[in-house]
Length: 145
Image (cartoon, rainbow, N blue to C red; front, side):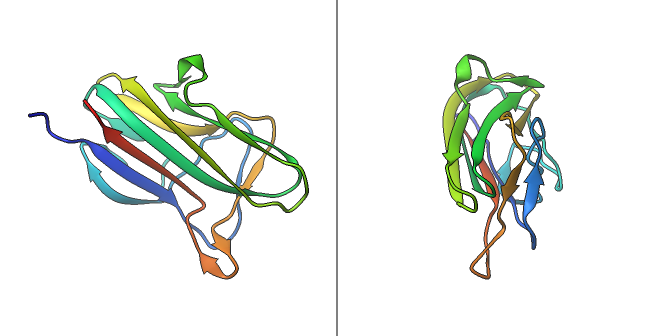
């Protein structure tokens, strides 16, 4: 039976966090990691084992009316076929929206994985809501086969 591989990383802070267009989300904390390599703070997870992986990400985005689009970068390239591209549109200033994405993709051996703002605008991620500290962003990865 194959050994499991999984990981959970998150972004927390005390102030709103900007992610410019074309920039990766820099995660600064992690939960359990098993056969996933991550050293915070970093924008990169290293996946040593090949296989099919389920990946989920969540971002709490605030700011002016605009469009936010994020995608997964595997080995320095956007995952093909728009399999991991997700977006939202804020139609009013100051709207806080949660962007979620999920996919099952094949990851080759010794790969790198990043979450990138592939949209046209800088986004503001919120680590505090009504005085409560929360995750501004998180990414979960789990090996299925």
